[in-house]
Image (cartoon, rainbow, N blue to C red; front, side):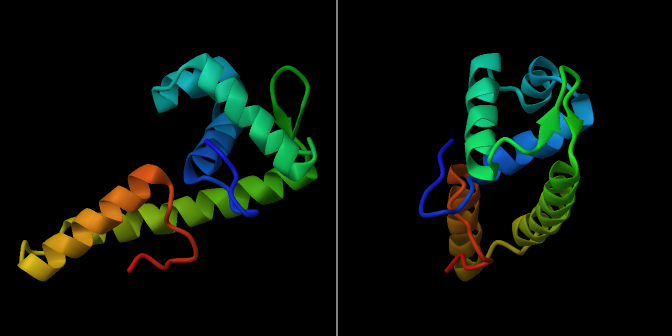
Length: 118
């Protein structure tokens, strides 16, 4: 999980939302089916990106900035997930299959940004 040119990896946004929901790095790692080591690394990237202003205390209580960022991340992920489900549900024509395959690959790598997945 890495930050490229100021953009956050989608997996980091998922981690952020899951950390807020679970209140624990280990619980978030289990829910996301990643290692605790990966989750801690992702948390370090999030803290570096946002200047360590997201959570306080051992139970990951969200700060005001953290709540705002989590709300935007949660809403964005819901829209993205719904859009991806719609793409997957497209009939399997050659053109839609190529689009679906490309979008799935971009989603899997976290490369989709700004809704542009041509």
